[in-house]
Image (cartoon, rainbow, N blue to C red; front, side, top):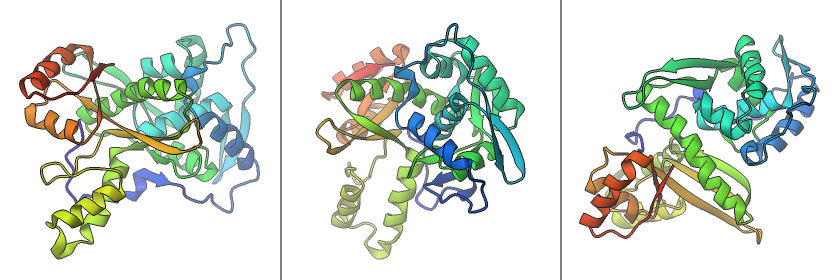
Length: 306
């Protein structure tokens, strides 16, 4: 369910970062943070859960940033990176994928992050399934990751809750990513990077704005779509909910575009997404309905269940 932004709607620079340089005044121990956390962030921790059933918890390290003192484990920094990449993550999904369904490991990490003002947790209502506990970075959490470059070079980070419907949608993308990433890694892919539609649209609209009088030129629009690895469908350039960029087993750069289709999609929506070449996913309750629409439109596409 891509958000319906218009070309003139640019991202607020206060809520996203992409490869910013660390503050020169940041103390030297940020180098240690960067090395530890970027290694954790290079691939999702979920597919290699740390088994610590009887192990002594890792000692927290003191970090000084802009006059603030934080005490953090590397697992807590990795959790912050996961939240920053997707803006919002459901608590139960974080437990399953980042902590191997071990709530006893996750609970003290989340409590410590919330207590220090780096992460915020809210119970947000949802029409279909009721309220869910969702997690997001705070402004200070976002600043910590940016200053220490904990997410790795070029990874955009986000913080703060959006409208309830969009918050749940962003949270669902985390589960969608986990499923697609497991397949990529199973085929030898590595160095995965998350690109949300926010980031793709920002780049795309920046280039479209430069067209001015040529904005309606089919050739110009197609050239820009190609530049961003997208397609023109019925005069539009559909943007996926999330893109995964990665390195193949042979060392080549590759990407896959993912769309989370919902039961609210109509034939036109699905036609555009299929024409754009997106990999389609949907919640189990919506799959059969969406498949019927594909059949009615005689569209050949697979819809994978979350």
